Image (cartoon, rainbow over all chains, first blue to last red; front, side, top):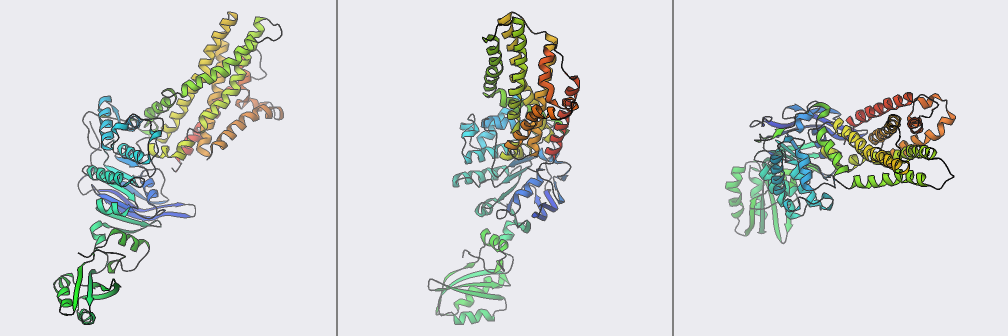
Length: 335
Length: 263
């Protein structure tokens, strides 16, 4: 078969520039600039009403931008939508299908938008997709009897039936139980081999598990876009966590004198002092920090480690406008 | 999309993109479900049942010819009355329900045109509904008149009347589909479409005669007269042409509006 060429390595699959959408008085999306690279699993985060679904609808031609624009595979969403949609698979937030059809008929119907034939090849592809989504045993049941999770699985099956270069998933795991979520994340991981996955969600755990790049949207504005590791590393100084028992005054004074310590915040927890030590020189801190504290014989160190942010810290910090995400989030793990 | 050995990609562009698949799906919703059977029974009972009742009725003694004429009139009147209601009811939700449920948003993310989505509905509903509510009852009518009086309507005039009836149905199908792209509730769609039809029974008495020439209101009355070679007060080609034009305008509005719909 002749087919449109796949994206080139390093290619930007989605690029939006100043993408804006307003509905009368409401600014649903404000000047969004986004880049999604090939074969990434791109998590598109934001609270409800942040503009995630609006962005997806604009990319797919279901709505028109009020200003700005976007390209998918270098093609303009306003003028080349049909060609774009040949290369995209889409799962809606609350997927709905024709209830009188079976899962197999739905997939056959979807496949026929992409391929005229031959029939046996299409049937094979349908069967593969049913297998992938774990619906083989329910293939010939009418959809009207499907649970929310089964509809979601069918949604993934139909979204990938054309082996798209780009898979756009709107809240793919929102209505699934933990096992269903795990399965969906696994499928996303498998599809990544030949597909770029752009998905919106507010389940931060999922994003942290599978995404390599993240964008955070709030009230229609992009507040962050970065590889997930960069985002989790925090935006400010490195922070070390120390849990100390005993007299802490001398250690506090020693840290205050160290040139590479930017600040120390302190809280009491279960009879111990928990310190968040923000440092300007990570290497110096690694070499010196623990030694400096342990000089005091009367002090015991119950825990020590570099603070690891989780996505919730970053997300909440950005969305709620918390200052100094890198200098003490809401929670952290000591290594 | 990865190259898949053996697959033949769809090639249709412009308004035709996805039309064949949509049409197959729409026809399937009539003919691969029990919907066709329900409609068939309904229209046979309503239209041909009425015809049978009139044909076999114990009214005043009349000649077979008079009863035959009465049956023919009843066929077009009953068909014109209940058929229009049926046409509006089967069309009112065809686009609206898909806009509301999200299935329209789903299928329109595939490589298809919005025009194909709308046109497939118009064609499938027209073909299916006309087959079940007009064509088959017409064929059964032939059987009924043959069994009762060993006679058949003259084919030419009957086909002309049948043509007007079909045009009448098509107009209301397209009207309801157009309203489904403009309004947001089934009640409003049915209300406006049926309100327009019902006003055709009242307004012509209040408005100048020429109004009948530019609306579909006189079509079903004229269809019965035409089939029986009876004179009709106006030239029927005028409302027929006007209905054709109005149907085309309604279809144009539906396509234009749905192209701009944000889903």
